[in-house]
Image 1: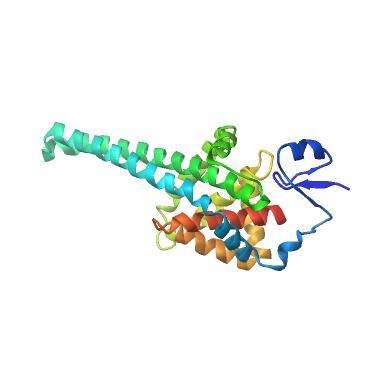
Image 2: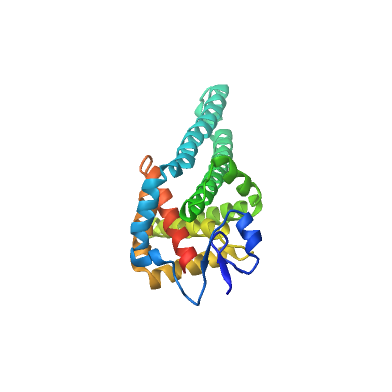
Amino acid sequence: MPKKCASCANHTNNAPYVVKRGARFYESLGSAQPSSTHKSRAERALKILGSNLGLVLPILLLFIAQILVGGFFALVLLAFGIHLGFHPFTVFPYGFVVGSTLGIIAALAMGILTAIFVSILVVEARNAVMGVPYTIGEAWKEVKGKVEPVFVVVVVGAILFALWSFVPFIGFLLDLFTMMYLIMVFCVLFSQTGPHYLSTGFNKLIQMASKDALTFVALFIASALSLIPIIDLLALPYAVLLCVLFIRES
């Protein structure tokens, strides 16, 4: 009987290879689900998070890294202003260019940092769902092997957020749905194989909205809460767990 790898979600008969990777199996018969699905994914994700509070660590490290990077760019901008003497006729033409350039670089750096730590979180969450031990070091090794697609996701996210900044009234909602999409894409990237992680992430999100409204609403709320500092320490891991569970079971 064909098996489905609990790590990559691909059908395979090469059991020794996948077992060697530390993954576990469940039988795959059509749309068969693991027996634990009598509880909603929202409940199970919350339970997994409660027993794996170590998932908070990557987001905590991201928070610290963002403070350090933001402080560095702020000091650079301050030093530039001091160098020009803060004279308005001097600062405006050059300060505007330098400030804008530093802002773009800082935003890109923040985006890359966020993508790296979220990727580490996704790998750890995937392993937590499977009951496989995990560490940040091991997760980072796996993330390093997919640096190129992670960077692609950063670029796609940056383009979408930039586009929505010009949309009045509903721009915030578009930002929120984009964040849900990006979380799903990262989960697909580290849960399945194949080059179509961007389109698969979108399809999975649509599938969640149409087939599992409760999980979709929970993901929407968790994504919104993850925009709030401190609260994001729990909200973002919970959002990732929701996506990982849905990908494995859909």
